[in-house]
Image: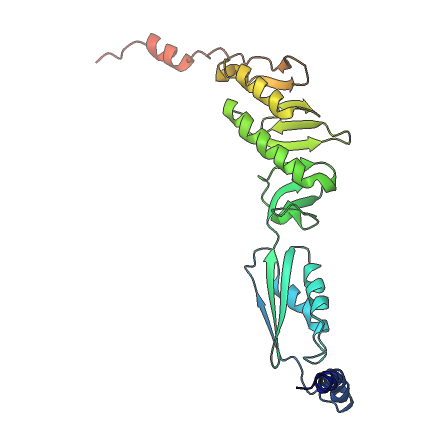
Length: 256
């Protein structure tokens, strides 16, 4: 084909592609009433997300015809719901919108009134619907992933000597403190936290479990050691005499 003719043909095709939607609008081919959305399919494993809330968020944004629906606007509306981690939105000719929802899965309480998701996002939601057994984490939002990782490591390491870590805190200076289910605290500081933990655990493994359970607070920030505050030992109560048995023992046998 002659190159000049090929260029002219390409320009004509391009102009047709640009002009077709304009002509379609002018002739009402893409009008809302001509191609309305009649079906909305919502998919997902719903534990916390309310399917009715998803439909309510989508409905105002699909009133336009099939060609006029803005999928990004629908997606943003669904992802604005408290428990939604991610949403996928697709059109299916001629009258259907599909919405697939991925829920946030909480792995910890964050601060006083928020939650941390399994993807490391801090979000606000109804914490009353979350198990109280989740760990409690504190720190800057931007370092949520780091706080979770420190919590995970401390929990695994301290479990070796019988402690159940339930809370981890990073203060504004970047120093760490972890706390256990029974209220014991371990001050890790800002640097070499893994090495400090390993040194402490190696020393504590030489003690009987009953002695380790008396730890109230341990400060691991020393260059070559640590300090420990111990709980007072539990003193067993003296047994109470069984007066009933003594009375029965002193009674006379009945005579026949």
